Image (cartoon, rainbow over all chains, first blue to last red; front, side):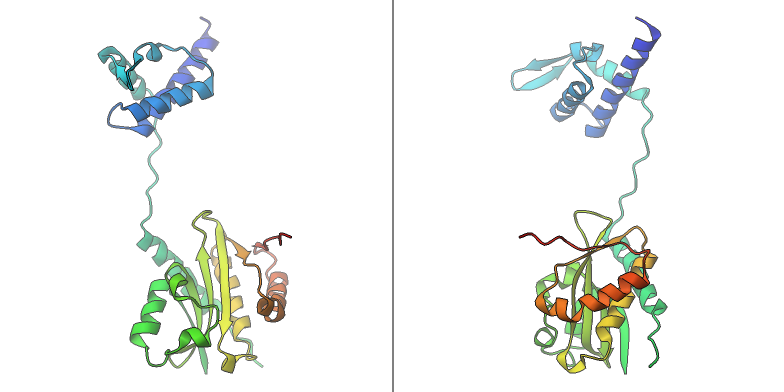
Length: 112
Length: 141
């Protein structure tokens, strides 16, 4: 394969690994695999290595140990963005209140 | 003398219904458009005569769009109308929007009263604060 194709596959694999990690950072579950499947569909009918390790089994999925390790290895190569801190409602209210109070302070009633 | 303040819904509820209950008895009949079920979700600019709330302007951050601020209602006690209270409350709203440039204001569709008394105030403020983005919902016929 040319370098360009390999590069393209690498990008796609990164996306897949990222999708797994987003869906379930602690392990691989049915829903994370569904996310992967969705991602694969989005990126094109990609038959990359990891899918060979994942096969449908009855109502769910099975992942071979080799597949599990493979996906975990992939994930190591993905640089994840730090999670944005989710503000608590109390923090939002406090910020909002400060701006409300400042607005009242900034208002000067026109003199007759 | 009328004083002005701002409160979150929780503070407003406590202020009106716990701390100054006597002064604010019958507030829902005096302040048309103020609804008990919505107070908690709103923020309020309020006009006070001593501790009696005689006017309020309610806003709410949209739960669907974090950049959108809803203007819910403006209401002034009938005995205190024609003193510029609604104008002052609306100007505070524009000052607030200046401090929160990430927000734009979505006006609610005005009622007949709103069109009669408040549209002119909004129109003047929109001209005075051209950098504030105000969106008026389109009427659907």
